Structure formats: C-alpha cells, structure tokens
Image 1 (cartoon, helix red, strand yellow):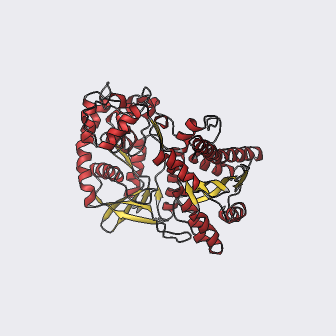
Image 2: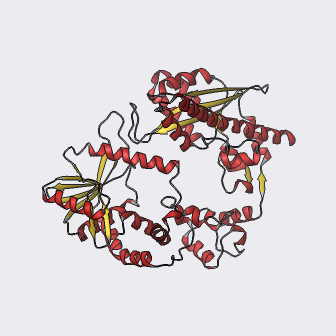
Image 3: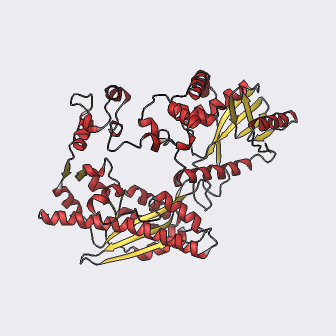
Length: 485
C-alpha cells in the first residue's frame, strides 16, 4: 500500500520512496530531535481531540483493511467526528487525523504542531483528500489545524484552523499525476538515479541521508551559499561534486566564487586589527554566558506562547581583569516553572558592571527580554543585561575565517580548531536538543540515582559551552598580544 508518508518521501526524493519499499532497514533511527518532535505531535493531537468531545476513535487493528471496515461502519452508524479514520482506494492508503461531518459534508482536518501553515503541508493534505475521494467519500473541505502563535497561556485560544480551498487544487492535480510514477518506482527492482543534493535535507533531513551520503567527505557544491538550481545544474551534469573540482569558468556570483576558492584553497584569513579593536571594547569582568531552554508546544507556564524559549539552566564563567576565573551555574531540577528561581539566581550571579559575552546573542537577548516582560519588578536589571551582551560569534562572522571550520562558524565548529583540548564528544549531552530531552527526563525521573546522573550530564554540557568561549577568548587575546594589539 502507498501511504501518505510514502508520497511525501517521493516528493522529497524518488529514491527515498524506493528505499522505504525495498530497504527500510537502511533508514537511520530517529535521533533525539526527531523523537522529541514526534512526542510533541502526539501531545498536540491529544489536546486537539479535547476540542471534539463527541469524537469517535477508530480502533486500532494490525491489518489496514480491518480499520477501513471499522471506519465505514462508524460512518454508517452516524458518527459525526472520527479520530484516525482509515481509507483505501486500490493500493492507496490514508489515515486522517480528524474527519468531521459539517452542514455541507465531510471535512478533513490535518493537525500540525507548527505555528503556521507551511508549504509542505499542502501536498500532505492533498494526498489525503485525493485518496478519500477515490474511496468514494464526498469531501466538502480540507483544513490544517495548527497552534496559534499569538496565544499566551492560560488563554484557551490555542489553535487556528486554516481552510485550504483553492490553494489545494494544484496539489490535488499533482497527486493524481504522481501516483502512477510512485507505483512504477515501488515496483522496480532497481533504485532510481536521483543523486544527492540539497533536497536531502529539505523540508527535513531524509531518513536515508546517512546511507546516501556515507562516502561524502568534504564540502560539496551543495554547500555553496545561495546557489540557484540554474547555476547548480551545469555542475551536476558535469559530474562536479566537491568544491575543489569546481572549474574556474563555472557560472557563480563573486561571493560564491570567493567561497569556493577559499575552501578549495584551504585558506585562513584573520583580520587581527579588527579582532583587537573588538576585544579592546570589552569591559571587565567578562561574563561568558549561556542559557539552556525548553520550548513547549503546549505552554504549561503562565505568560508563555507556543514554542517560547523558557530557560531552565545557565552557565556563567566570570573572567576578571587580573585573570581570575570564577564559575556560576543554575539548573532547575523540578517540573514547576523554572523562571522565578532562575531570575533570582541570575540577579545574584551577574553583576551590574562588565560585558556579558555569548555566542549568537540574539538567542540570549530574546530570553532576557522575555524575562524582563514577565518580571517587571526586575525589568531594569534584566534589560541592562540584554544591553550589555556582546557576541563572540561576530569575530568569526567578520574577522576570523578558517577553512577548517568547514563552512560553519558555530561554536562547535570553531572550538576544535582554536581549543582542540576541549571536546563535546565525551559528554552524554552534546547539544541543545539533547539538553532539552535530558531535562524533561530528569524532572520526571523517579529513580534518584538516574536523576542525579542527568543533572551531572546537564551541568557538564552547559559548563563546557561557556568554558569553550573562555578558551576561545584566551586564544584571541594571545593573537592580539603577538601582534602588539
């Protein structure tokens, strides 16, 4: 049976459909981020069903044909709202989120845990409508139900339903045209020659990405910034993959050519004078600071919007003018609102003088300004902290470029080059999403030893984030001292 998931895989890459059909074992298991998104989707589904108290859940059966029959039976018995109804038409199968009988007929409601309609949602909904209509059901409408980004907890207006009328028509026509091609690909014993490309991560990373990219080592033409399909296609046709193989006469913009030549030539460009000027403007003590946050789709805390970044942890290394280094940290360890105790700790740990250094300050600044709005009695101090932020990332965006950063200027790309003795590889928590997962596990963990282990893992990760900035700062100041800056 060809499902909606098969269709979406086909749209991203025909080879993905073939692999799903013939070699599903080659798919990479869902990572922490994917699993968390799946859990969020399930949580949103549960809340949405509360909006339809008379809804009927079609019982699960291992065989799709049984669930199709149960769906037909529920409709025949007069059900007005069905959860997870199943429909088939020949070799096509669809499980809808919600089916509602309204005055003008049946409406499909596809539930999304996003805060807006995305373009990839329309083929998803179109395939459902196509299959339901092919099965014989008269469909009067189809809509997307998503989170309301303007909703502030505890406001109950958490969802927005967006009817998709004319916008769905071209996608319905394409679904009808695509299905014969899907059948041919699924039936073929040989995979289609789709090739790798930017589509492998758009709209999200394909489950077979690691399989298809396993032999790729180095930057490719797909890393060239803003390379349009028109400029990319001749390179693909010529068999060019790696940057070092891009010919001198390739049709590129000046910036794209500079990017290719820089990385292919393994260049390093350091504007020492500009770096020294940046560092000279910093005021001691320097607070190297980093938040860890949680972004709930269904906000449990008052005053929060869907996916608002709620801080539950921070690390702060304080570097004094005489070279002394202190460390302060905070981690909320219970399931209640972490913001009140975090703000109190923050006001204690961050003095009223000195530069606050972060890496990509737009994130920290946004969190601080939200806290200022939420706690007006501390707004002046919190806004002052936001105003004192300085972005260490600026150095690597503007003044320090190294081919060994592999086209990125993130902290985890810069650190191995400037401070190779520090590494995230030995840590249990190695990125922000893993920190979110660890925190969610920790605050609900009944076993005290496991809970303490998660606490240690979280503290170690956040500590390294700010220590990394300190070591990078030492490297940069040494650079200035060498040049007399």
